[in-house]
Amino acid sequence: MGGERFAKIPFRNFNPLSQLLSQLYFEIHMFSFHKGTSQTWRGNDYYLPANLIYFITGGDGEIVNNGQVIPLIPGNAYLIPINSFLSHSCKTRIEKFWTMFSLEIFSTVDILQSIDECINLGKFDLGETDSVNDRIKRNGIADYLYFESMIFQLLSRLENIWENIFDKKVYQDKIYRQIFKYIHEHINTVIRIEELSDHINMSSPQLSRMFKSDMGQTLKSFINQKKYQRACALLTGTNLKSKDIASEVGFEDEYYFIRFFKKHCGISPTQFRRQKFPG
Image (tube, rainbow, N blue to C red):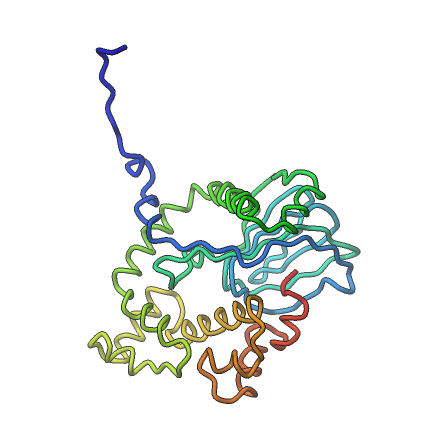
């Protein structure tokens, strides 16, 4: 054995996405267990502020994602990407674990935003309900790592689309990194397209056309989306009052902030915080 030589091949040669791993920011916003009925588990026409995975343990729930009805089959896991337009309900009851998380590149754009449909990730055994609930209650480092590994294990099942996601995100970052960074750093202000175009020495019409073509949405809707996501994070992760959150995302008037939030979410910021949406 001592005389044999083995070629050392970097792992990244097999997985192009690994080139981005050092630039990815992962965060679990929430992991919880939920039991609901047809009266309590119902929501219509809202945008997801972060990625969502359902682990269905029982019931007869369903979601409507971009007009497609998807039954939630017990024993299966489902990925619902960030910014999906969603409704949810059940005929009689629903039982599930659910997690909301972000997987951002350069802490600005979620890499799963390129996926435009809910994906059935197949069978997945979480283990005993009581054991998983104990981990949720402990909320220690080992428990966080346990849930993190579970999420990445499920995401690894997306092997057929990772390369396309990677190629698209590398291109988008190369072209729009300065724009993403500017929005990220000025999310607490009123951001105008003119100031973004000046920031990169491009005319406003040209920037707007390019962004819509490359990103599949207008620059204004992207800015609003980032403000909505930031507001959701503050509502779930802090005790700030609504008027203070409004200021944090660039609204001087709390009334207009509430209207903005309800347009994206379908419910008020107070309702969102109370029900730990979208459990």
